[in-house]
Image: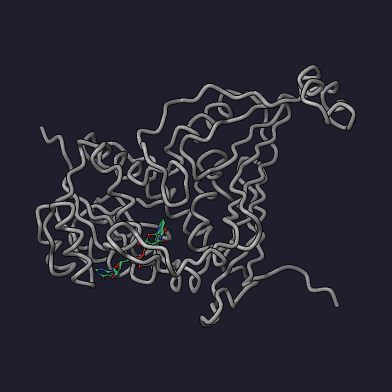
Amino acid sequence: MKNTVKIGIVGCGFVSEYYMRTMNLYKHVELVAVTDLIDERAKKFADHFKVKCCENVETLLKENIDLVINLTDPENHFDVSKAVLSSNKHLYSEKPLTLSLADAKELESIAKANNLFLSSAPCTILGPSAKTLKNAIDTGKIGKVLVVHIEMDDGPIYLMNPDTWKTPLGVPWPYKSEFDLGSSFEHLGYPLSWIVTMFGSVENVVASSHCLVPLKMEGKEPYSGTDYSVAVLKHNSGVVSRLTCGIVAPMNRGITVTGDKGSLYVEDIWDNNAPVWFQSNSSFKLKAARKKIITRFGITRLVFGLNKKKLPMIGKSKASFKGGNNVNMDYMLGIADLCDAILNDRDPVLDIDLVMHINELTLAINHPNSVGYTID
Ligand SMILES: NC(=O)c1ccc[n+]([C@@H]2O[C@H](COP(=O)([O-])OP(=O)(O)OC[C@H]3O[C@@H](n4cnc5c(N)ncnc54)[C@H](O)[C@@H]3O)[C@@H](O)[C@H]2O)c1
């Protein structure tokens, strides 16, 4: 019986090295070959990680591989993904899956017609933090969930000299493409994957997206990509989520889930090991929390039970490194799960329906038909 899945990578850019940091932890995943439009980049990567370097996508697709990881920049996602699925290989794409709904639907129909898996990043919902939060929700820890506040504000990273950031192999962070495409396209997948997995599909979106700081770096050209989005999403389950995503407001990547019996909080949805905090509701505590004389001191907070409780974690991330954002994020979680799904003939957690829905919601928020009611 087959016990490994052979994979190829298209795109040896900035993020590819993050994947390699934990690749070895997953013995059922075997990287065979890579390619990049920039020959030198592909060669350097292949030499360093001791895999085959292919001339281009076409030659890579002729290799004996089952699954291709598309790590190209978003503008190239569709063409590469289409070539992969059309040559009968399973696909795992970086986010966003595509830049248009029509492109996503085309990929979906090729995958379904060829009986292939189509999966996509981000994969933080497979981490211990998300699993612990989901378990607390599913087991009724906070009763009926009513409202979710989720933030994906990464702070004004354009003030942090992003034109100097490089990987250990010397690949620069593609700040132009990141700022031109916009932080919503780049980052909405993270909060959306959490709320759709936990509270179900979304039936209605009201959104407002903006480019607030076109001139992000001194001496550089202006960028037009969205750098701040706000959305309110109504899930079929009745839950309402309020989401923000951007690189203008101070860093805040937390989620607060409010139910009729209490609330749950995770400080950083990028950190696979971020603790999950619980606070129960009671009339006594709610009244106490309004009194400064009680909230001001540690001892009175303790006596009145105002401190959140840390829930026991379900698992611990195997990744022993801190990523570029100084958080424990294992980029391989989604691929490891997909490879296990291929070997065991089951659906991956990041299955085609989830991936399509997240892509559709990303497009809806980033390109809202209406930005609200204009006051005369
Ligand atoms: N940069 C990050 O911090 C980060 C983090 C998480 C996810 N991502 C996602 O990962 C993806 C890649 O981002 P990146 O930062 O590595 O970009 P990048 O520009 O550094 O790398 C992309 C690479 O793909 C190659 N490429 C493009 N089209 C190709 C083709 N047809 N055939 C072969 N190679 C091709 C380019 O030459 C380039 O080397 C994006 O979808 C991005 O959203 C990036």
